[in-house]
Length: 313
Ligand SMILES: [Zn+2]
Image (cartoon, rainbow, N blue to C red; front, side, top):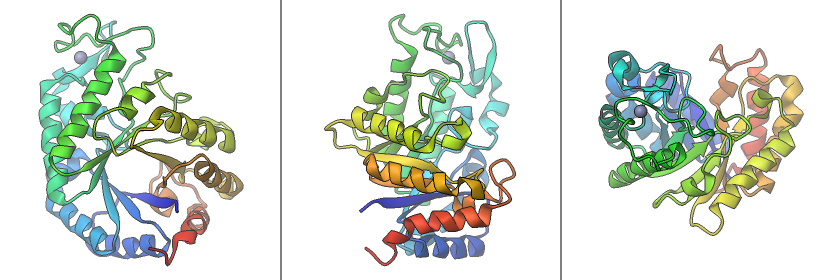
């Protein structure tokens, strides 16, 4: 049976979260992802624990996403770290400073250790390491030239450096009892195509590998894009004990996109995704950047896709 999960964000008021979680369970989802930004970690720590507990009380598996943390993960949010530690940012070889912390920054590692501890304390089961990547294209061998990177071995490629960074994250999360999923942005949308899929899949202790083929954002045909990307994930996994997962676009859609929405779900199932995630609850209608005027209609269509699991255990 395919499992389903949904991302939830934009509300920290428990009574409203609780009624939304009831709707999520009734719709047939088994997992919920709560975004966990730097602001959440600093100002909402106890409230996040209550939100995670409310999710567990309804039988949901609960993921955290480091929402735009240090500018190196996906998310429509700002980073306190980048404002407070501008010297820790990536610098490309032209000297241009990028809005993302260097993966080799020791202060970034301290921030992420604290974030992981906060996620574990809040009770999260798993972490989605969402779209980790360098903030500039590295396919021509370009490297960060910040004070941390200047002395790195010449033969350490940016891709290998990224995989080692994510390996460190997975191990840190594991040491606090949390599973890890890595979601790589599709090569079709990545700054640096040809990402290290197989190397990511091979990270010791990784639970799942996924990608997010958002066809409308990419202006690509839903069936082919979702199929190609999910098969790329499965190929990278091969015989490894890692689950294949897929994110389906559930934001920025209108009524005219409902046929493609159904096609995308079916393509993800056919390509072997064990868990299908949707970004996001209520078709993200509450976020100006992601919503549409038809969010209610799109959300109902999403729930028709997950309804096959209603009543099953
Ligand atoms: Zn650097």
